[in-house]
Length: 132
Image 1 (spheres, one colour):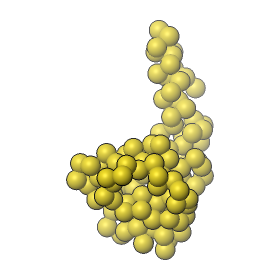
Image 2 (image 1 turned 90 degrees about the vertical axis):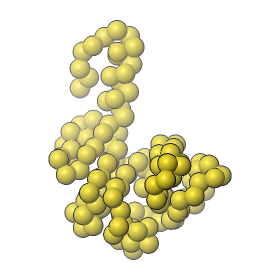
Image 3 (image 1 turned 45 degrees about the vertical axis):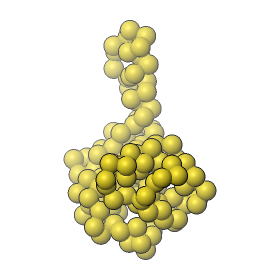
């Protein structure tokens, strides 16, 4: 879910390596980020809507990745994929590190690019303290 820079890059990589991939985005113009040789499916709609998820094939999905700009939407769609559709692997991007800690659970894997980015930059500066 989400065809921004990260979602488009992941979809292109996975499809290019033989995986069946469906990208869902609210804005059909977002699909322009996909390479011209992308062979996956594109679905326009809101991934917190079960009809949109079912049109995208959620019932047979092995994985669901939520990488939109909205933490709440990512978390909600990820919960729906995990709890209602029993998708085995669910990854959820959460920008806010505090929310990421609250939402992280064994059944729903979350990550915060804010925290990861700060840790990388501190490492580049030679600082090794943990980032809160």
